[in-house]
Image (cartoon, rainbow, N blue to C red; front, side):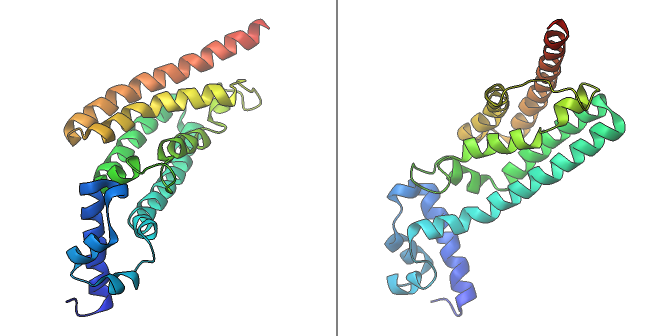
Length: 213
């Protein structure tokens, strides 16, 4: 039996992660997790009142860290864009994509759990939430890229949603299919270059369209 609550909590978290990864959220059971942690069912419930609460305890810290990552990278990218221009911004954007990938692989088990969370649970919409974070990080950047902070590119929210969904699909596929990290890095490098080109073309086409109207 664990000697103290801190030790038993660590055992519970380890057993819960193992159970969720092996069986998925729906098939995982509190009884099995208690057995793996060397606890009685009653002792387990002193740590977590429900399976959902336990699942959230595993995932919440990683998700919150990802939110902070997006904020930091957004601030960095905007600074680079304003201070150094478009070329430096595109390089910073590619670097951010690699940093996001590194973050994902440093918490790969947790991302596996998030991406396989069933409907009705807290992270069932993780893909959409990541798309929204990408959209928020782009706010205002398109105006600076067009060299005129007063010029609205006229991109609808629907268009931006489609673009950023397309941009994240490769990462979603990498997580879903468990690519090796070295292979994932190569894929992200190519995709980042393609995304930068696509974004610049969208801005150029928007400028041409606005100029002809």
